[in-house]
Image (cartoon, rainbow, N blue to C red):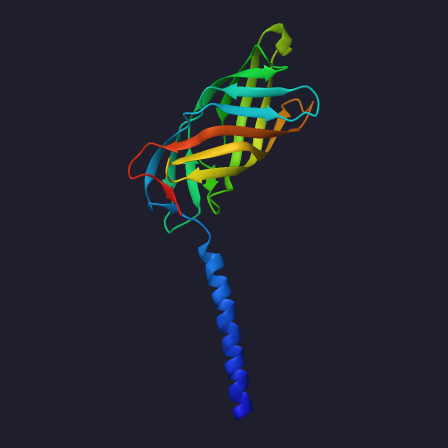
Length: 203
């Protein structure tokens, strides 16, 4: 009987220890708030898409980004849904210098922002169509897509904004299928910024 009680106490202590370890790790996941609210999210900073070809430098620069409507889910969730009808007028850099680049957002409202970690925020189902026009050096133009999961974002509750510095996870692909596909990095000091009170938070 005493042995059985000792075994039970040891087992209970082990379960308590495991629970103590598990609870903090579960609590470390961040959620968006306030619950069931809608937000107007702008992109006031410039956005740079750098296409990593392994050869000549090539990129796309936009003076500002898209406008989104964001919905915070109920119950609490690290995912915030995005919808948008934005198009962007941008310019090429590097070998695309002198070219005009039009970007259109697709796949919405399937986009969402994963804020599980405030220092590695991800935008899921990122999907943009692009069209290049301009000078003869632009090769007569062409169309492409930029798709994937954009990772490496940092959210600030102080400025209510999401920043990327060489964010990874996207792929640049010509519609014709060649050349490429190539990886893409994204840099923007305020890729998303909340302008609607009560302001969105991540904690």
